[in-house]
Amino acid sequence: MIYLMLDEKDITHVVGEVSSDQLIQELHFKNYSMLDSWISRNNKYKGCWLVEKYDEDHRRRKKVDSQLIYEKKGRKYYINTNCRVYVIYKSGRKKYLSIFQKPGHPKSKYYCKVSDHDIDVVRTLALCFLGMKKEQYCILEGGLNLENIKVMSKSECSSITGKMARANKPVGLYENGKLKKKYDSAREAAKHLYMSYQTVSDYCNKKVKKPMMDLRWV
Figure 1 (cartoon, rainbow, N blue to C red):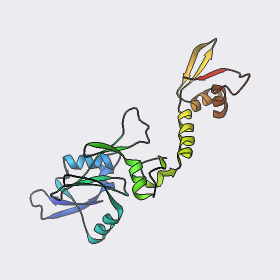
Figure 2 (cartoon, rainbow, N blue to C red; figure 1 turned 45 degrees about the vertical axis):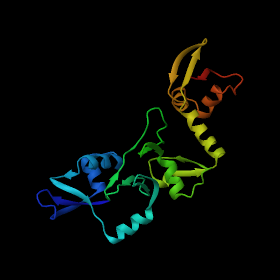
Figure 3 (tube, rainbow, N blue to C red; figure 1 turned 135 degrees about the vertical axis):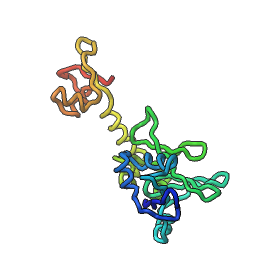
Figure 4 (cartoon, helix red, strand yellow; figure 1 turned 90 degrees about the horizontal axis):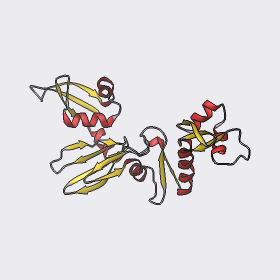
């Protein structure tokens, strides 16, 4: 996204241009959502007003790369291939919405408030741009990016998420039936006990008849 920098005293005078990436780097934001939130509150930069730059190619790209996902009371909500959600009001004003994570939810889950409800951003992206069917599932492997979204069947998803959950589940080292040491994950336990992750997992799942130590999921 390119923004025009308009003179504070004369908005018809363009001082320069700045990109979203430049703003994120200079203002030390972690992602586009933080930038969008900042712009919606105060779109001033180096004493200039920021407005989105549009040209014909940009308009065509936006039309192709954006998808209408919800409409209510004249407000139209869109999601685009840059993994950003925005609303266009009756007046034509456009506003990007914040994408957030919820405490206690997986870090791969992202949400956005659309009208009066939260949407699953990753699933919405997969349905809109990756050809995912409603009965299919998807997971995010890495940062919020279309390339990191994997579409699969329910059984495939269960297999992957199950392994991820076990890998991150706390492990306890017991002696005489009492908890001696707790590890945040099977991988951490494997590292400190000089064992493989698979061995730790087998011990916790009681797949070894005579284990060298008492390890359990906690």
